[in-house]
Image (tube, rainbow, N blue to C red; front, side, top):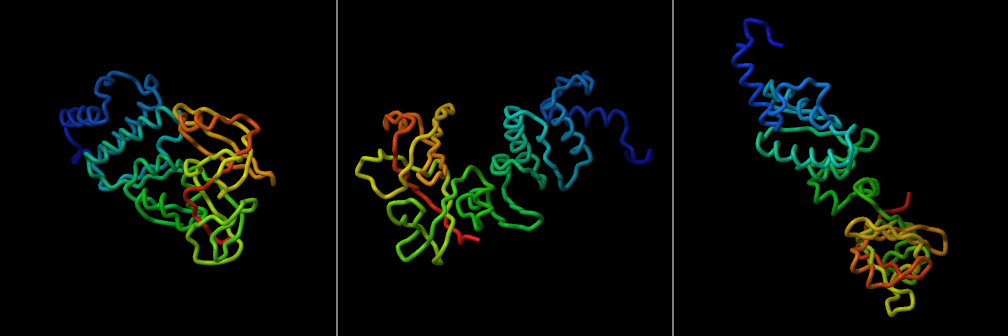
Length: 252
């Protein structure tokens, strides 16, 4: 791309190409045509081309968007390792929350062009400043209710659930599926929301349980398989859902 008088020699270009292919782990494909490469391999090559000009900053705009889930996960891990080796500042644009949490040192969550929150992946996930951030970063259950001096009371809950809130009145509370504990409805644990088991989905080592309340609201809980087996519950059984961690925001 450079003017001829500034262009590197053919020998230097070949050496540089070989270095870049080795860097992106594709030096064994030097004789392949682009049409003979897989989607993941083409993304490796696209990054090698971007690195050829030795940039100070890389802009990657949803680079893995057209790839299947398995290839996306492999490329995320590979890109993170490559970034740690090259130390190039990278602006990575994505709508995939898991992708952002895995590859980033710092996350900027945007909503219709407005910055909602900036911080490390762990800080943004553990301490969301707005309801949008909480819902955007992973699966979330939303509970309608209100806050008073006793804490947050979800509609349909037996009693108030202790949660930090610096206001009183109508509120929305959020809890991740893995932060919900389940107890038999006829047991000793009464501090929670009485619901029924509507559907059970096994996902590898975990179990996702869809729960439905008397008012028709649906919650999701995620348990490990051993915990689920110990509960000995079936579809239609009543349970008490107890949030272990709630984030409460004023209702709009």
